[in-house]
Image 1 (cartoon, rainbow, N blue to C red):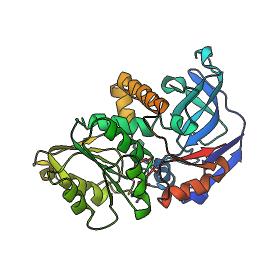
Image 2: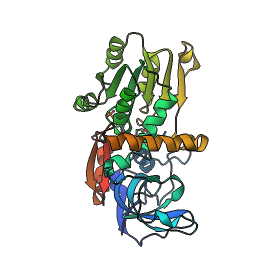
Image 3: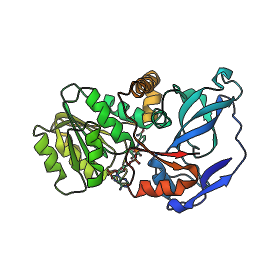
Length: 323
Ligand SMILES: NC(=O)c1ccc[n+]([C@@H]2O[C@H](COP(=O)([O-])OP(=O)(O)OC[C@H]3O[C@@H](n4cnc5c(N)ncnc54)[C@H](OP(=O)(O)O)[C@@H]3O)[C@@H](O)[C@H]2O)c1
Protein backbone atom coordinates (compact mmCIF):
# COMPACT_ATOMS: atom_id res chain seq x y z
CA UNK A 1 0.00 0.00 0.00
CA UNK A 2 0.99 3.64 -0.43
CA UNK A 3 1.54 6.11 2.41
CA UNK A 4 2.86 9.67 2.59
CA UNK A 5 5.56 10.92 5.00
CA UNK A 6 8.04 13.75 5.24
CA UNK A 7 11.66 13.26 6.27
CA UNK A 8 12.68 16.93 6.37
CA UNK A 9 10.66 20.04 7.16
CA UNK A 10 9.98 22.38 4.26
CA UNK A 11 7.71 23.12 1.31
CA UNK A 12 5.18 20.77 -0.31
CA UNK A 13 8.01 19.04 -2.22
CA UNK A 14 9.26 17.33 0.96
CA UNK A 15 6.23 15.01 0.92
CA UNK A 16 7.23 11.47 -0.10
CA UNK A 17 4.82 8.78 -1.29
CA UNK A 18 6.28 5.38 -0.39
CA UNK A 19 5.30 1.71 -0.33
CA UNK A 20 4.74 0.04 3.05
CA UNK A 21 3.04 -3.00 4.54
CA UNK A 22 -0.63 -2.80 5.57
CA UNK A 23 -0.63 -1.77 9.26
CA UNK A 24 -1.99 -4.07 11.95
CA UNK A 25 -4.61 -2.72 14.36
CA UNK A 26 -3.64 -2.88 18.04
CA UNK A 27 -5.91 -3.06 21.10
CA UNK A 28 -8.86 -0.69 20.75
CA UNK A 29 -8.08 -0.05 17.08
CA UNK A 30 -9.53 -0.87 13.67
CA UNK A 31 -7.98 -1.17 10.21
CA UNK A 32 -9.73 1.05 7.64
CA UNK A 33 -9.39 0.92 3.86
CA UNK A 34 -9.56 4.56 2.83
CA UNK A 35 -12.17 5.91 0.43
CA UNK A 36 -11.19 9.57 0.81
CA UNK A 37 -8.90 11.67 2.99
CA UNK A 38 -9.92 15.19 3.97
CA UNK A 39 -6.84 17.42 4.02
CA UNK A 40 -6.34 19.91 6.87
CA UNK A 41 -4.53 23.26 6.67
CA UNK A 42 -2.75 22.56 9.96
CA UNK A 43 -0.49 20.07 8.13
CA UNK A 44 1.02 22.90 6.11
CA UNK A 45 2.03 24.48 9.42
CA UNK A 46 3.26 21.13 10.80
CA UNK A 47 5.27 20.39 7.63
CA UNK A 48 7.04 23.76 7.71
CA UNK A 49 7.66 24.13 11.46
CA UNK A 50 11.27 23.73 12.64
CA UNK A 51 10.95 25.38 16.08
CA UNK A 52 10.69 22.58 18.69
CA UNK A 53 8.82 24.98 21.02
CA UNK A 54 6.02 25.55 18.52
CA UNK A 55 2.67 23.73 18.94
CA UNK A 56 3.00 22.79 15.25
CA UNK A 57 6.43 21.11 15.56
CA UNK A 58 6.75 17.36 14.84
CA UNK A 59 10.08 15.56 14.76
CA UNK A 60 10.83 13.78 11.47
CA UNK A 61 10.06 11.36 9.97
CA UNK A 62 6.54 12.69 10.39
CA UNK A 63 3.05 11.78 9.25
CA UNK A 64 0.18 13.96 8.04
CA UNK A 65 -3.14 14.36 9.85
CA UNK A 66 -6.44 14.09 8.02
CA UNK A 67 -10.06 13.01 8.14
CA UNK A 68 -10.26 9.51 6.72
CA UNK A 69 -13.47 8.02 5.35
CA UNK A 70 -13.51 4.29 4.64
CA UNK A 71 -14.65 0.82 5.54
CA UNK A 72 -13.42 -1.18 8.53
CA UNK A 73 -11.55 -4.24 7.24
CA UNK A 74 -10.38 -5.71 10.57
CA UNK A 75 -10.50 -5.05 14.28
CA UNK A 76 -7.70 -5.31 16.83
CA UNK A 77 -7.80 -7.08 20.21
CA UNK A 78 -10.39 -5.69 22.67
CA UNK A 79 -12.28 -4.00 19.83
CA UNK A 80 -15.91 -4.69 18.91
CA UNK A 81 -15.71 -7.17 15.99
CA UNK A 82 -19.13 -5.94 14.79
CA UNK A 83 -17.32 -2.84 13.48
CA UNK A 84 -15.91 -4.92 10.61
CA UNK A 85 -17.57 -3.92 7.34
CA UNK A 86 -18.99 -0.64 8.67
CA UNK A 87 -18.35 2.71 6.96
CA UNK A 88 -16.65 5.17 9.26
CA UNK A 89 -14.86 8.52 9.42
CA UNK A 90 -12.15 9.63 11.82
CA UNK A 91 -9.49 12.26 12.41
CA UNK A 92 -6.07 10.68 12.72
CA UNK A 93 -2.40 11.57 12.90
CA UNK A 94 -1.30 9.26 10.05
CA UNK A 95 -3.99 9.72 7.44
CA UNK A 96 -2.43 9.85 3.95
CA UNK A 97 -2.46 6.14 3.04
CA UNK A 98 -4.45 3.40 1.32
CA UNK A 99 -5.01 1.69 4.68
CA UNK A 100 -4.91 3.29 8.13
CA UNK A 101 -5.17 2.17 11.72
CA UNK A 102 -7.65 4.17 13.79
CA UNK A 103 -8.54 4.29 17.51
CA UNK A 104 -12.13 3.09 17.74
CA UNK A 105 -13.05 5.61 20.48
CA UNK A 106 -13.76 8.55 18.16
CA UNK A 107 -14.94 6.69 15.05
CA UNK A 108 -17.97 8.37 13.49
CA UNK A 109 -20.46 6.02 11.85
CA UNK A 110 -21.20 7.07 8.26
CA UNK A 111 -24.60 6.36 6.69
CA UNK A 112 -24.32 4.70 3.24
CA UNK A 113 -26.08 7.61 1.50
CA UNK A 114 -23.56 10.22 2.67
CA UNK A 115 -20.97 11.27 0.06
CA UNK A 116 -17.32 10.75 0.96
CA UNK A 117 -16.93 14.53 0.96
CA UNK A 118 -19.69 15.05 3.52
CA UNK A 119 -18.44 12.13 5.62
CA UNK A 120 -14.93 13.65 5.64
CA UNK A 121 -16.37 16.73 7.35
CA UNK A 122 -17.89 14.92 10.31
CA UNK A 123 -14.79 14.35 12.46
CA UNK A 124 -13.09 17.77 12.23
CA UNK A 125 -14.16 20.62 9.98
CA UNK A 126 -17.90 20.25 10.63
CA UNK A 127 -17.27 19.53 14.30
CA UNK A 128 -15.15 22.69 14.59
CA UNK A 129 -17.71 24.86 12.73
CA UNK A 130 -20.59 23.66 14.91
CA UNK A 131 -18.54 23.53 18.12
CA UNK A 132 -17.22 27.05 17.59
CA UNK A 133 -20.71 28.42 16.91
CA UNK A 134 -22.01 26.76 20.08
CA UNK A 135 -19.05 28.12 22.02
CA UNK A 136 -19.91 31.60 20.72
CA UNK A 137 -23.50 31.03 22.00
CA UNK A 138 -24.96 32.35 18.76
CA UNK A 139 -28.52 33.46 19.44
CA UNK A 140 -31.39 33.95 17.00
CA UNK A 141 -31.37 37.38 15.42
CA UNK A 142 -27.65 37.96 15.93
CA UNK A 143 -24.99 38.95 13.41
CA UNK A 144 -22.11 36.57 12.66
CA UNK A 145 -18.81 37.22 10.91
CA UNK A 146 -16.92 34.20 9.56
CA UNK A 147 -13.34 34.86 8.44
CA UNK A 148 -11.90 32.49 5.80
CA UNK A 149 -15.59 31.99 5.03
CA UNK A 150 -14.84 30.09 1.81
CA UNK A 151 -12.54 27.49 3.38
CA UNK A 152 -13.32 24.01 4.71
CA UNK A 153 -14.54 25.09 8.15
CA UNK A 154 -15.77 28.49 6.98
CA UNK A 155 -18.16 27.27 4.28
CA UNK A 156 -19.88 25.03 6.84
CA UNK A 157 -19.92 27.78 9.48
CA UNK A 158 -21.71 30.11 7.06
CA UNK A 159 -24.45 27.53 6.46
CA UNK A 160 -24.74 26.50 10.12
CA UNK A 161 -24.94 30.12 11.29
CA UNK A 162 -27.81 30.71 8.87
CA UNK A 163 -29.63 27.59 10.08
CA UNK A 164 -29.11 28.47 13.72
CA UNK A 165 -31.06 31.67 13.34
CA UNK A 166 -28.46 34.33 12.60
CA UNK A 167 -30.14 37.42 11.23
CA UNK A 168 -27.08 38.43 9.23
CA UNK A 169 -24.15 36.27 8.13
CA UNK A 170 -21.05 38.09 6.90
CA UNK A 171 -18.29 36.04 5.26
CA UNK A 172 -14.78 37.36 4.69
CA UNK A 173 -12.48 35.69 2.16
CA UNK A 174 -9.03 36.47 0.82
CA UNK A 175 -9.63 37.06 -2.90
CA UNK A 176 -12.39 38.35 -5.18
CA UNK A 177 -12.67 34.89 -6.79
CA UNK A 178 -13.70 33.35 -3.46
CA UNK A 179 -16.53 35.77 -2.66
CA UNK A 180 -19.35 34.26 -4.71
CA UNK A 181 -18.96 30.86 -2.99
CA UNK A 182 -20.08 31.82 0.57
CA UNK A 183 -22.75 34.03 -0.99
CA UNK A 184 -24.23 30.99 -2.76
CA UNK A 185 -24.18 29.18 0.58
CA UNK A 186 -26.30 31.81 2.30
CA UNK A 187 -24.00 34.65 3.40
CA UNK A 188 -25.82 38.00 3.26
CA UNK A 189 -22.65 40.05 2.91
CA UNK A 190 -19.24 39.02 1.55
CA UNK A 191 -16.06 41.06 1.88
CA UNK A 192 -12.50 40.60 0.64
CA UNK A 193 -10.34 40.98 3.76
CA UNK A 194 -7.20 41.32 1.64
CA UNK A 195 -8.46 44.83 0.81
CA UNK A 196 -7.49 47.53 3.36
CA UNK A 197 -11.03 48.91 3.83
CA UNK A 198 -12.75 45.57 4.52
CA UNK A 199 -13.56 46.28 8.18
CA UNK A 200 -15.38 49.48 7.16
CA UNK A 201 -17.55 47.43 4.79
CA UNK A 202 -18.48 45.16 7.71
CA UNK A 203 -19.29 48.26 9.85
CA UNK A 204 -21.51 49.60 7.05
CA UNK A 205 -23.38 46.27 6.95
CA UNK A 206 -23.61 45.92 10.75
CA UNK A 207 -23.44 49.43 12.27
CA UNK A 208 -24.19 48.09 15.81
CA UNK A 209 -21.24 45.66 15.49
CA UNK A 210 -21.16 41.88 15.10
CA UNK A 211 -22.28 39.56 17.90
CA UNK A 212 -20.19 36.51 17.07
CA UNK A 213 -16.95 36.17 15.10
CA UNK A 214 -15.49 32.82 14.07
CA UNK A 215 -11.78 33.48 13.55
CA UNK A 216 -8.80 31.30 12.62
CA UNK A 217 -6.67 33.61 10.48
CA UNK A 218 -4.93 35.49 13.32
CA UNK A 219 -2.62 38.50 13.06
CA UNK A 220 -4.14 41.83 12.16
CA UNK A 221 -7.38 40.13 11.04
CA UNK A 222 -8.04 38.94 14.61
CA UNK A 223 -7.40 42.44 16.00
CA UNK A 224 -9.74 43.95 13.42
CA UNK A 225 -12.42 41.39 14.27
CA UNK A 226 -12.28 42.33 17.95
CA UNK A 227 -12.68 45.95 16.89
CA UNK A 228 -15.85 44.95 15.01
CA UNK A 229 -17.55 43.27 17.99
CA UNK A 230 -20.76 44.76 19.37
CA UNK A 231 -21.10 45.20 23.16
CA UNK A 232 -21.34 41.67 24.63
CA UNK A 233 -19.94 40.32 21.34
CA UNK A 234 -17.90 37.09 21.36
CA UNK A 235 -14.90 36.26 19.15
CA UNK A 236 -14.28 32.52 18.99
CA UNK A 237 -10.63 31.88 18.09
CA UNK A 238 -9.64 28.42 16.90
CA UNK A 239 -6.49 28.80 14.80
CA UNK A 240 -4.05 31.13 13.07
CA UNK A 241 -3.67 30.20 9.39
CA UNK A 242 -1.55 33.33 8.84
CA UNK A 243 0.98 31.90 11.32
CA UNK A 244 0.59 34.96 13.57
CA UNK A 245 -1.19 34.53 16.92
CA UNK A 246 -1.14 38.05 18.38
CA UNK A 247 -0.95 38.84 22.08
CA UNK A 248 -4.18 40.69 22.86
CA UNK A 249 -4.05 43.72 25.16
CA UNK A 250 -6.78 43.25 27.80
CA UNK A 251 -7.97 46.81 27.25
CA UNK A 252 -9.34 45.78 23.83
CA UNK A 253 -11.97 43.81 25.77
CA UNK A 254 -13.16 46.52 28.18
CA UNK A 255 -16.02 47.49 25.85
CA UNK A 256 -17.94 44.36 27.01
CA UNK A 257 -16.19 42.10 24.48
CA UNK A 258 -15.05 38.50 24.95
CA UNK A 259 -12.49 36.31 23.22
CA UNK A 260 -13.05 32.56 23.67
CA UNK A 261 -10.72 29.82 22.49
CA UNK A 262 -12.00 26.67 20.82
CA UNK A 263 -10.25 23.39 20.14
CA UNK A 264 -11.90 20.18 19.06
CA UNK A 265 -9.61 18.11 21.27
CA UNK A 266 -10.44 20.33 24.25
CA UNK A 267 -14.18 19.87 23.57
CA UNK A 268 -13.77 16.08 23.29
CA UNK A 269 -11.93 16.04 26.62
CA UNK A 270 -14.28 18.44 28.47
CA UNK A 271 -17.64 17.41 27.03
CA UNK A 272 -17.37 14.10 25.14
CA UNK A 273 -21.16 13.59 24.94
CA UNK A 274 -21.63 17.05 23.42
CA UNK A 275 -18.79 16.36 20.96
CA UNK A 276 -20.49 13.12 19.88
CA UNK A 277 -23.90 14.79 19.68
CA UNK A 278 -22.40 17.48 17.41
CA UNK A 279 -21.12 14.81 14.99
CA UNK A 280 -24.51 13.06 14.98
CA UNK A 281 -26.23 16.40 14.28
CA UNK A 282 -23.87 17.08 11.38
CA UNK A 283 -24.54 13.61 9.91
CA UNK A 284 -28.30 14.35 10.06
CA UNK A 285 -27.87 17.76 8.43
CA UNK A 286 -25.71 16.41 5.61
CA UNK A 287 -28.05 13.42 5.18
CA UNK A 288 -31.14 15.61 4.88
CA UNK A 289 -29.43 17.96 2.44
CA UNK A 290 -29.70 20.89 4.89
CA UNK A 291 -25.92 21.19 4.89
CA UNK A 292 -23.94 21.20 1.62
CA UNK A 293 -20.48 19.63 1.49
CA UNK A 294 -18.39 21.40 -1.17
CA UNK A 295 -15.23 19.55 -2.19
CA UNK A 296 -12.36 19.48 -4.64
CA UNK A 297 -10.63 16.13 -5.27
CA UNK A 298 -7.09 15.07 -6.15
CA UNK A 299 -5.54 11.57 -6.31
CA UNK A 300 -3.56 10.49 -3.23
CA UNK A 301 -0.47 10.44 -5.46
CA UNK A 302 -0.89 14.23 -5.82
CA UNK A 303 -0.33 15.04 -2.14
CA UNK A 304 2.36 17.57 -3.10
CA UNK A 305 -0.07 19.41 -5.36
CA UNK A 306 -2.71 19.33 -2.63
CA UNK A 307 -0.35 21.03 -0.18
CA UNK A 308 0.67 23.56 -2.83
CA UNK A 309 -3.02 24.45 -3.32
CA UNK A 310 -3.43 24.92 0.45
CA UNK A 311 -0.36 27.19 0.56
CA UNK A 312 -1.62 29.14 -2.46
CA UNK A 313 -5.03 29.63 -0.75
CA UNK A 314 -6.46 28.10 -3.92
CA UNK A 315 -9.01 25.80 -2.27
CA UNK A 316 -12.68 26.58 -1.78
CA UNK A 317 -14.54 24.18 0.52
CA UNK A 318 -12.78 20.94 1.43
CA UNK A 319 -9.87 19.36 -0.44
CA UNK A 320 -9.97 15.56 -0.62
CA UNK A 321 -7.24 13.08 -1.54
CA UNK A 322 -8.72 10.00 -3.15
CA UNK A 323 -6.78 6.68 -3.25
N1 LIG B 1 -8.98 24.42 16.97
C1 LIG B 1 -9.27 23.30 16.32
O1 LIG B 1 -9.71 22.29 16.88
C2 LIG B 1 -9.04 23.27 14.84
C3 LIG B 1 -9.34 22.11 14.11
C4 LIG B 1 -9.13 22.14 12.73
C5 LIG B 1 -8.63 23.27 12.12
N2 LIG B 1 -8.33 24.36 12.86
C6 LIG B 1 -7.80 25.57 12.24
O2 LIG B 1 -8.82 26.17 11.47
C7 LIG B 1 -8.24 26.90 10.38
C8 LIG B 1 -8.97 26.58 9.10
O3 LIG B 1 -8.84 25.21 8.83
P1 LIG B 1 -9.41 24.61 7.47
O4 LIG B 1 -9.10 23.18 7.44
O5 LIG B 1 -10.80 25.10 7.27
O6 LIG B 1 -8.42 25.34 6.44
P2 LIG B 1 -8.42 25.46 4.86
O7 LIG B 1 -9.67 24.98 4.26
O8 LIG B 1 -7.15 24.91 4.36
O9 LIG B 1 -8.37 27.03 4.69
C9 LIG B 1 -7.45 27.87 5.31
C10 LIG B 1 -7.82 29.28 4.79
O10 LIG B 1 -7.20 30.23 5.63
C11 LIG B 1 -7.12 31.44 4.89
N3 LIG B 1 -5.84 32.10 5.13
C12 LIG B 1 -5.69 33.31 5.68
N4 LIG B 1 -4.41 33.64 5.76
C13 LIG B 1 -3.70 32.63 5.23
C14 LIG B 1 -2.32 32.41 5.02
N5 LIG B 1 -1.41 33.33 5.36
N6 LIG B 1 -1.94 31.25 4.44
C15 LIG B 1 -2.85 30.33 4.09
N7 LIG B 1 -4.20 30.47 4.28
C16 LIG B 1 -4.61 31.64 4.84
C17 LIG B 1 -7.29 31.07 3.42
O11 LIG B 1 -8.55 31.56 3.01
P3 LIG B 1 -8.61 33.00 2.26
O12 LIG B 1 -7.73 32.89 1.06
O13 LIG B 1 -10.04 33.17 1.93
O14 LIG B 1 -8.10 33.98 3.25
C18 LIG B 1 -7.30 29.56 3.41
O15 LIG B 1 -8.14 29.05 2.39
C19 LIG B 1 -6.75 26.55 10.37
O16 LIG B 1 -6.03 27.59 10.98
C20 LIG B 1 -6.68 25.30 11.24
O17 LIG B 1 -5.43 25.15 11.89
C21 LIG B 1 -8.53 24.39 14.20
